[in-house]
Image (cartoon, rainbow, N blue to C red; front, side, top):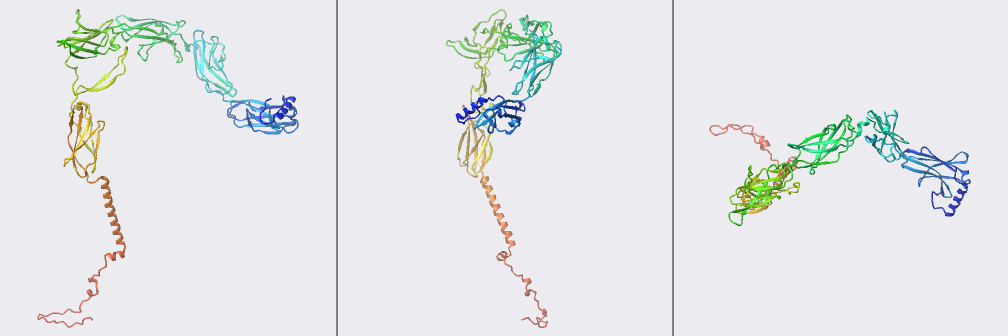
Length: 629
């Protein structure tokens, strides 16, 4: 037996091993658990009973029982049992292992020896199987069903596909191989053209789970073999229409089938789908195809059933067909250049054009022809160029006004495109902006273009932008303007220049990038009148705008605010002082002393006892009065 611990001297371990070996451990201890399979995270209880007399070498002395969960020591309780046995009980409050071994060990002289073991597994009840689906294979009429098993329960789980309504009139089915989630019910257990109930049952020690029950007629989920496309041909006189013929798969001739057709050209990114085709018809017609174009065709069928579970067959092998060609249609986009030839009286012309698109080429273009006059019935005009390229250089007499360009394929030639030879490129005006796109041409498609703008000739702008004053202070002025309309630019605007001057002709300027629409003039003098204007420039000239008059401020906004704040503060101080003076009598006496009112004095209140009367002669007639001392 292997030891549970280490650190005991070798001779001591050897002696204990000899004692246990001589006596044996069979029946020495027994381990019981509450349940060998429990829900993950639940409690586990166990008990270990050691019979001392059966464990030789342990008859004397105290027996100590220890527990090990795999290789980890766990604590239990110990007591004496009946018949001289020693019993240890253990409770694990949360068992978080999916599988572990619980060992009962005895300790002698510091050495632990395993004398009993119980294996415990933990997990969950089985998860509900999901997405059950079935397919009937018509080659052997076996019903193959598959499903999703769900999350792992960590426990041994038996899975069975069950069905009722079968020939046996009882629950039958099939069992998948281990690790698989599909199996096949054989034909002998099926009842075709009758409803059957099918489901998946998963069972382990903690419970059972079932999938949703599927009620189907096995024939409703039959997956047919694809049909075979036999022939594809164009309908005479209707060369944009084709007729397809097919044969149904063996064993489906007696069924009502619903079919679909899909097709696409090699350069198409998606398939065109035709639905609602009867399988028994054997033929179908479809129009709207491009001329001279190769198409790939595929077809599939399913049993015409009201069930939404009916399966489509696989798509048939691809069959290709190229539609009939037709003479090219449409006009060719062309441009040209010309210069006098080395000999007098002739003009050397360089003509270029774009290849027609597939819907206009109507097949593979074999070449292009340039003639001096249009083709008339029974008469071929003189040809100056016949090429497979999309450009051609040729000489024509001076004074030739027109040439005619056409494309041809195996089915015929397009109507000629008239190219007018003028003194310049037709329709290109000077001082007008043109958007130019360049398309790369590949063998069977047109690539992503690049774009640019250009002028055939430039001049000075018709107008300059109108200036607006946005903000002004005593030393700065912010100006803004709107961009010129394209039809007034007469070229690419290269820059804007701002000019400003005061009355003493102190002139200054600044150049502004065309991406900006505002500018701040700095370093102005306070309370000064300035005149400002803007100039717009192209590579061919410049144009001045109208003048704007502005006057800088005496003070900045912050200075004005500081001034008003100072005056307000002075006013507040004066008011506070006035109120204080009114309240303080002593200070009032010092500044405004009290002056007596003569009208209220004692002298003002004194009057003589009698007023002497003066006679006409001037003598007084009143008696003398007594004056106060």
